[in-house]
Image (cartoon, rainbow over all chains, first blue to last red; front, side, top):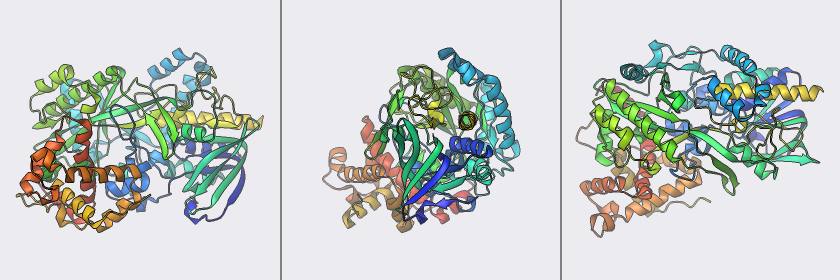
Length: 500
Length: 130
């Protein structure tokens, strides 16, 4: 795949194309692939660098410095403050995620249609279902095999089985995974079917051009019609791209509304309605070695409480990230690091009902988001069940990591009790945010939504949004497959409009 | 804007990071002070976002001057003995105040990243049989 690297662009560049796509993650890649396949000219632009798999760093710090937005350290404002984890690399978060692939659950689709009946025609379930089939074929999505899963995943199965919680190997978009445990740093063997390995090369084969390290500052609008984008390359040159048919924003549920705001494209609740999946994690110490930095990074999940809004996953990390998640400091931390090959680490992702908002700020973006008391009850239940599963799987002790609660728990009854008696103060927990949605929601009412049912901006012609900003709500499951499906539909709508 | 660390600040920073992962009697792995961090600090300064760098620096200052308030001794963190350094970090980490608890967390995050970026430490840790 040919990538024009922004660090080589020192002078002003003017380009003309049919469609410009901002962002090369699952949304941008899927939309661009669909549009390029139809024969339209496409230019893709990403702020992040293009990194070959052989160059993916081994350690967590270097990977985060190179391929994560703000090193994974941008924080939401609210209670609690939580890191917002997003990739910033060609291929987007698909390069550095756990490769977890879920279809949009039917019950979530039903909720969307119930809230806006017109979505039954705009996003028909049958169409989505056949897109999911296609995506699963394209990306080799299949359940994690036990022989590469590793102890961290297999223990989760054991714990969930013991508690009678429905569980299964995670379906992932990988081909020939050897269980190196490096998904979050990017697979060094290129065995993850992330967008840089799949849909982006497809789009480029169909004639799309791809620019890395170019930050788009503004969408240019003339007479109510988007006509292009302006940005700056890492090499210092300006990049102006005129697009005759469409401007597609696919920069994530944080960056897309911020770009609209910077471009002064008003209309509808831009940046409002931010939703996400906050996650809390618990570790447990086992007598046998676990080495959670080996095996499938995320290979097993417990889904029995999904409809309550909680999903459990094994979390494999680089050893540097495992160490940061140990609860101790000082000499105890040194001892715990030496012992950390015995730790299993699992997380609970919460389908939070809270809604926040995104604003473009002087320094970038600002996300305001606070969990509701109802969300906190789910977090507490999640931690309780994680602790019980770890102990049921044979952990010597678990570390809930909740301020004001026992640092180490050996008795399952204590973790059961936690569900009723654990703190509900969000600041007692350490959480992180993944999966973001809803900041340019799709809908019928221009006052309450930002894009129409054909993904076009309510008030600006030729401007489309393809990423999870348009989702009416969060999904409660990993959204990559759903994002690809909706972005493909967005691409189809653009092609239809262009051919008219 | 990047304001370079002064030599004194670097000393405070290094003593805090070293205290976060000190040598311990088990002897399987050296503490953080036994690891060359020059390239780490270069990459950190180049790559870490402003807010993170600011938070880390603020934590270094706050913890350096925390002993009078927390241990009742008019000394800086750097001049404490190993036992008191450990005691102070424990105290701050278990503070009932949320923002105070974030101070050692910020240092821990940086120290762990620095420590486990070192290939030798990683290899030795991976070979420990526990």
